[in-house]
Image (tube, rainbow, N blue to C red; front, side, top):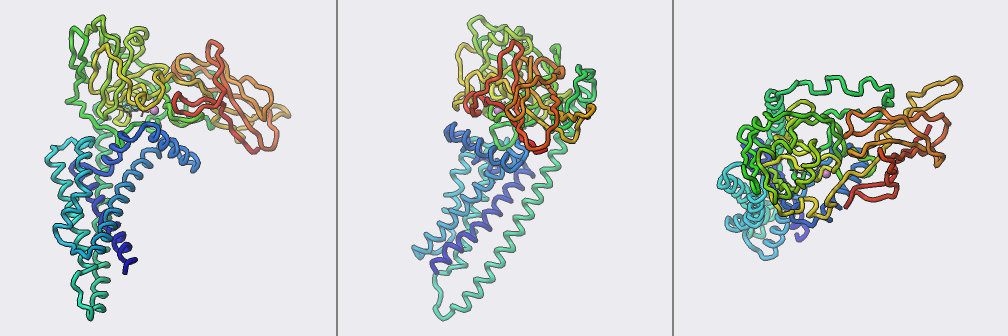
Length: 538
Ligand SMILES: Nc1nc2c(c(=O)[nH]1)N[C@H]1C(S)=C(S)[C@@H](COP(=O)(O)O)O[C@H]1N2
Ligand SMILES: [Mo]
């Protein structure tokens, strides 16, 4: 009987918590109501210490790489799965404890027990969902909806307990009780499974629909060509050094560009009502709409953006064309006072960062960016506005900008406050994408295997890439002209074929001859360094 206790609690907890999550999900997709599992997870990643979060991200990315998964695509899905699973586990544990406790005390699973149980689970979750949640609905509505769901969950758990362990059972009726219990278990299973499948299924359908609508709205609102820049000739189209087959695309399709954001879900901002206040140490405070910003002279720049969390050879790097306005132009209109030293950016997702005004004054390329690949900035990548800071990792470059304060006070940025490098200058890196055995070139009696990849050094540029095989001498690779002086450089090296298994290594040097750092360092806290290598069995 004791054993059955825990088992029954576990069983009921699993069924009812799954239903609870499914209904919340449906509410979120149907009416933008809060999805508590994501809110709980987002709250945790904020309050837990930075190193622990970093460790968590690193292990997750490590595990995905070990499984051969594409990190850029899978990271958010993994995070969302973790968020749901964590909430689910919490509900199951609470229900199981409830069964154990009630049984031990010989208590009756009545209505008040159910309400108390629902409140125990629900109150903290509701509090932090209101505090950090993404739902823009009226708080009273959000609280009311969640309260109803949690109380219903508590009542259902308590009622199930009552049905499975009625307090006043007449000893002689044991057999009847058993049948009754079995019937109840079956009915509960069928009912909760129906709710879970219907809620989750309908929710998923609605989610797909919504995604399509967002995409359609973005496409129609775009002031640029719908095919994107990729349909136009690239500045290096005639370069004789062709990428080796299997090398990453020189121009990353936006849908394949890596995404990193601190929340479980991207931040959705309504571009029609969005305004950017630029206030503080200025003589002319501004309140800019997206159209106001688009009126400034626009500039296009091919940009390679990379994330500091990536290991050497990471997929958390991509190249596209960024369009926006020089921040110098906008600040001239705001009339920044001489005492000002920094811009402090606030973002829609709670992210923040400081940018040095001296850096902006020294580089007119630093921009407010509103378009990628000739189209409106995608929601995931920071619609309506993000900054571009040449030479720095993504962690220094706010997306979903909602306000800018001009100030003389330095404020550590979101990731800086969590132990990452304050400057976060990109590390010079080179990567082997492919040893293209399928593309062997025959040169008389000699067979040459093309080896290819990229090298990147931010604005410092690349002057040399070298490859060596099995620890032999370093050989110079050919460099393809890059899309711009702020993108990666593709390279190729033709290796005289020799059968067997071989280890290929690559290194590079910056424009001024500075060699890439060969010492191995982890991404945290300054960005990864070390030599990339690729083993190939030929
Ligand atoms: N508001 C906001 N901006 C942000 C972030 C974020 O979480 N929130 N992440 C930063 C990090 S760590 C990186 S690597 C880049 C990623 O930009 P992408 O997702 O468009 O590739 O955005 C940066 N800007
Ligand atoms: Mo990042």
